[in-house]
Image 1 (spheres, rainbow, N blue to C red):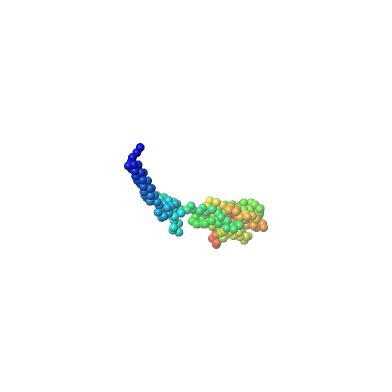
Image 2: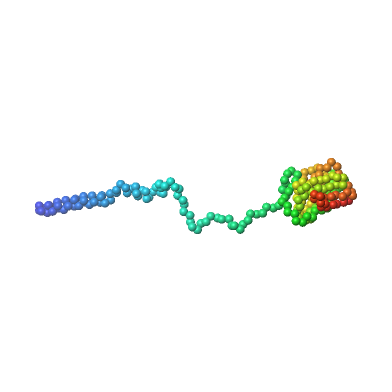
Length: 201
């Protein structure tokens, strides 16, 4: 049987243990107790950028220094447009012209005396030439005035006496009767200057 002094010692030890436990628990609670501002700070630091942004200005994404926008080379020129014939109205054709060496001739008169087949063949053996306003004159005074038209280099056009729709290599005089007969002199003029003549065979 234990003595009264031993019981008192054990009681003291238990009491001290209880006090130490209570003090330690209180200290632990005090150390780890969070103050009211800390949760908001942690939340602000851990939240996505859009949730904590206070500025109304949009965010500009960073651009890598080695990424540059494509720039068109300064030495690349636009492709040149071709000078193909273009219709200026229903029955005429025109392209930009720069006359340097004009050599237009009358190479033939086909089917003279037959209105539906009769045609004067005009050939260009030089640079392209603007025929607008040129005239083709018959001995009887009948005169054809060329519409807006360019005769390309090394090319030809046929002027038909009959009716028809003008095309790049065919023009139509729309005369009621045949114009040419054997022995007639066909005269091609640029203003007052005679450019070419041809005797119908």
